[in-house]
Image (cartoon, rainbow, N blue to C red; front, side, top):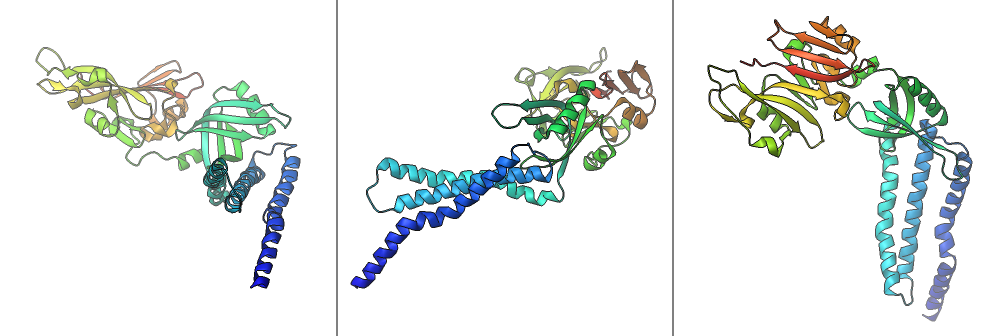
Length: 378
């Protein structure tokens, strides 16, 4: 019995003396080697391509390992014999709880991006902004920010060459666009191409709704994932998440009589995405109605408010606000009934009292404003 206890005491003393080396030695060597590797790598920023992903993944994994090492240290301290203060116990418990969460959030994007290495995502950006960071002793960092064609906002790290190319092209064309191939969770750029507009691949990757017709005489408009064909009940918009302001919610529209046409009112609809559209609501009935029972006969949207991006608003044929050009419209819709220089095109059905589209373009030729009406006023 005495001999067994003596052997146990020896093993316990050995473990207490050399246990930390056994536990933390490999981790220390790994971190030390990785630190040397990233110090060498950091002499030149590698932010793009597979090397950029390896750099990002390595950094995140090291943080995760440090977090797990901290957990081991806290557990060991918590169960170590001897008197412990309440503050020490609470500190170790906090480390055991917080550090695994930190490891999870740092390593998770890397793991989720692994399946995308063979087929990374692609987006198109407009509203490009270039930025750099020269703080600290390390090399400069370069960034590209912009609005994605699918409505998201992106912030990518670039290499120096891609940054210089972009700023030079942007200085010559403020409407410059970018096609970015990237990993979605770490937002690592795999490939980058600057473009004057959309290429053919965009049509394949971002198709319109199957419910959106190609013919402009359908007077249909796709807003987010829903297609509306004018005239359409205001209730169709409301059930899809659009809201009337408190000021307009109580409006009443008088019924039609023999001496005037349909009563109507301009109102603004908003949604939880902070988007807004201006619509005219008509009362086509003989009795007075609440505005929520009215018919939307006109819709107007301006891209300059930057509330819609690319696929979030489309017109017949899949043309996109802010992305499609005047040439795209002419090619798909043909010659307009009216045009004003290069800024406006109007497509009208039958005669001057009939439904119409008015499409406006900015100086670079991109679709900037849409007004569609399909409702007889009287």
